[in-house]
Length: 263
Length: 327
Image (cartoon, rainbow over the protein chains, first blue to last red):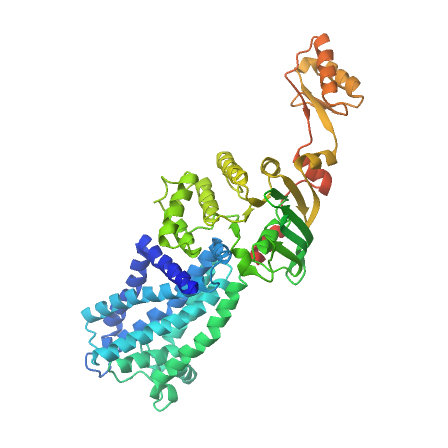
């Protein structure tokens, strides 16, 4: 059971770091809120949705997913930083469970997501977001988002431990995450994309996540390209499968990388 | 009893192209201090990383406190303390936060962790800075805190990897004081350093390593003897240099050499203080007052030079090894 208490200590460290550098929390919240406002007021007027409540209803799930997708970068750069400072060596020389540090880190980053999603939800509400589904389904949607962020956090562990420099990590994560979130149904209909990108967008986990959230929040997923394909018919199932696949692959890989962090 | 044993350790990087360790063997007697002395890139950090379970050797064996490092790393971690080359503590957190966190990770329980943190802060003169984030600490304070973190549970064996690298002279003096205190407390210590003076000050025994191998070991005195005997040195005013050269040469029976800038005349001697006395007497009867006179035993710098044929200089290989080592 000491493994669990180790994880608790490390998770607490993550939270303590947040309270000591409130800027991190502030900026990780400002950015998504800024996206909400920009997309809502810049694109909102020109994208017709035919959805009651307008573009913001479709936009919010997209921005939620984009935000949790950036957990990957957060986890990765945090770990790369610890690595550079020699903290990973110190932790690895302690008589603690060898996975405690990474598990605590991923959990801490998920807790940060709770705060960020809450603030974004409020910002969305202010600019007109009104999910039409019941409270239970909305809550389930947020749970889905947290789970997705958690799964990606494990990809971040591997990226962070593999990189030679924290700045590289930022850039690499950005280059991976940004196209993924835009080559999707998150912000605009995929029907305008070239055929090949449409297929990509259809199967992109970001799209299935966005579609799943839209469904749970009580919307029809209008931005999908081809009706009738498996991911657009079953976004919840597809997203779950994706998350499980990500975790099944990346948790063991990341833990192995951590144990051999210096070999 | 040997508390630390390393036998024929080999560690290569870059598919064998860089041999960080090339069959290195060493051991540390219980309750003593071994200093692993060598230039950058000699393999010091690699040895420490293997002995502290952070790195697996390609071949060879190692044990700490009788526990096999490769087979039972978890058990080894329970008896060691490690303080690395850079202060591995959380910069954003305070000194107190850091020590409490590490205490909890050692499963002391919150209450006991707090008590221990305060004890250590006190002992390392950090009580005043306890509630400040580490990033406001001086280099010396960081190192002391890092050392404190490695002493939370009194370790049987302590590994200090270049504990004073990058510190200013005052920070170094303070650190030496702290380490000497620890040693009095009876800990078994393996310390790496590239400072010859540091090894001389702190260690019972010195293992000189170069290119991944131990090239000499023994006490500081023994190593110095290995290099050769003493030198007699006299500093005089410019006008007396010529006469003094003559006297030193006569007494020592060897050719005397002159450092013109320092006006320092020196020659190897075999009779030690007798020669010193003779020279002083001759200088006195010649009416020459010496500004400085003494017998000098070879420095560890001389030891290194005569053992390796090159001075204790930095090597580029170090950078590569370090970069690889991080991965």
